[in-house]
Amino acid sequence: MLTDEQTFRQKPFRVHELLADVPLHDIWVFHLPGGKDGLTAADFEILVFGMMDELQERNPAVKGLFQLRFFLGRIFHWDDAQPQRDQALSYVNRLTPADRARSRVEPGSKSELGWVVYEFDNEWLTEFINDTVQGFAFVGVDRQANEYTLYFTIYVKPISWITPFYMALIDPFRRILIYPTMMRNVHQQWQQKYA
Figure 1: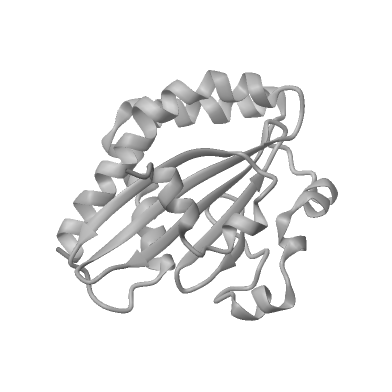
Figure 2 (figure 1 turned 120 degrees about the horizontal axis):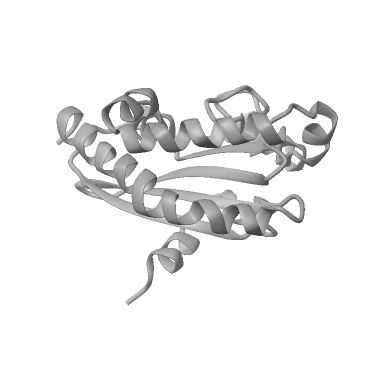
């Protein structure tokens, strides 16, 4: 039986080629029964990220972790904007003219996490760069006869010597608390809207 990662890598998503040199850090796969025809990756991106503020309000532990991260970011200047560096490193620069024409939003547009690399009908990729990581969040959608399969992945490219230490520090909190809470929220919203 194929693993989630093997199944994901067999899907004809543009992200596989575009981020071929970036390690896949996390993958979450959801089989969501029902749903109406015509849902796009943007609809699923809203399911994954659209309720972040409400999620933090409902879960004090998640809210506390985000507040701690942003507090440390201010102290150590992890999140200070470096537009020239960020623009030079951005994978928006790797898009082909065909990618840009296909994108439903302008590549490089601001997003909740950073900026959109591209948004296709069935794929959405956003990028964020700071002094700890160059990261990418991906949402991919595959429509089957009576369900949607949602692929939510995180890619992490080291940006400095701090990246492996930073990721080792935050991984337990992300994998044990933050992402499972987000994913429960995805299932709840799906049931309410589409099941």
